[in-house]
Length: 157
Image 1 (cartoon, rainbow, N blue to C red):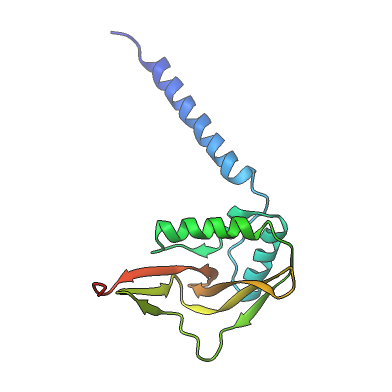
Image 2 (spheres, rainbow, N blue to C red):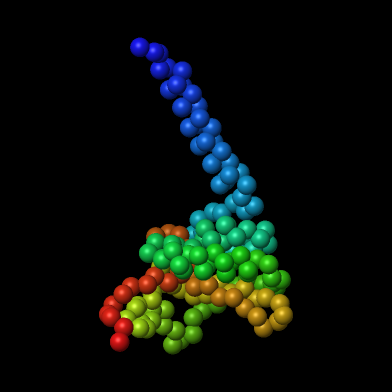
């Protein structure tokens, strides 16, 4: 019977090297260090910092993803990838209009925010008059950007 100790040690060493590489890839290469914001203004500032750094992953990390479909996640990733390519002049907070409805229903599907929403994070872009808007809200003590969660409520007619 052979001694398996060298094989076990080699396997463990390979596992540790792989884990270290993954940690380096996902944290060591970040352009912007994201801190979970505890205020709307801090979320706005984090968004602006990530936008300045053209840090797509940093902005993606600001969304509350629970319940959001893979399709919406992919669309958001593409949208943010395009956003960081444009010139912008300001990132600001804005309230919702008085008649704003965060939840809508269409074709047997309810679309609701992934987190209870409070207002908009607005990116003013060039040429003047172009904007991008992202709903934001709060879960627990942390502020997040929000995306829609789809809930089937009836068969479409």
